[in-house]
Amino acid sequence: MRSAFIGDPFNVLSRTLTIARTLASKSQVAIRAAQRAIHDGRCDSIKEGLRIELECFGEVCEKGEMKEALSAFKEKRKPIFKNE
Image (tube, rainbow, N blue to C red; front, side, top):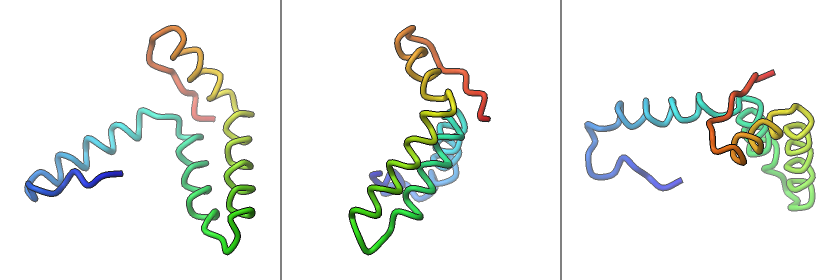
């Protein structure tokens, strides 16, 4: 992610709240999986990191959040995530 804070240090709180709102509107299941993939995927081996990433992706696909996201995209509407 590029740094959006450079140039106006007084804009940090406003920009932080904007980012937080954006993240809050996303699938929390997917956010948690991404966090896990980033954290646990820092391995000595690329193969192991990719295995963890694939495992996290599989978990998201199993939850139904992926289906809702794809349906919303197809129907040109905002997704309604259950965050289960």
